[in-house]
Image (cartoon, rainbow, N blue to C red; front, top):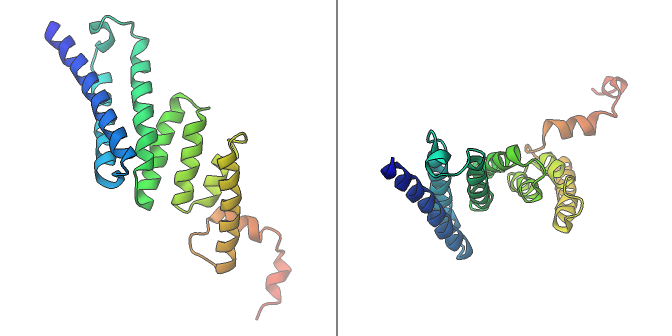
Length: 184
């Protein structure tokens, strides 16, 4: 039992240490490889730690504290991991990390804002706008909301394939069937 407690404490310390290294790599702008890998390792370390049976009891803390340990460290890692993602697929993965935070804390403004940013970077402007609208007090969110509106209009004008189906429905909803009857 004593060995398991030491192992669990060591696992938690290691997750926190990895997170701190990732924070430092993030600050040094070493995003693509180092910080992203470290945040992901920290999330996996935390997940393995928290999922161990009777973890809280072994540490002498109430079972209710178990989700708090998970939530605090994992939220921090998830929210930072999102900013290290360099490609569209990674931006969409970042959305899932934000969703993990939002599952336990639906009003987390930082997660909502960063989810909007991830959608914007993935060129999913309508989804980004939905997120930014939930942050009315955030000046950056307001500016990005307007930027997404402009990008959306630009895509419509250019006929860009990134145009989302919901946006196309909105644009063409005012057309009546007789408009198409006059076409050759």
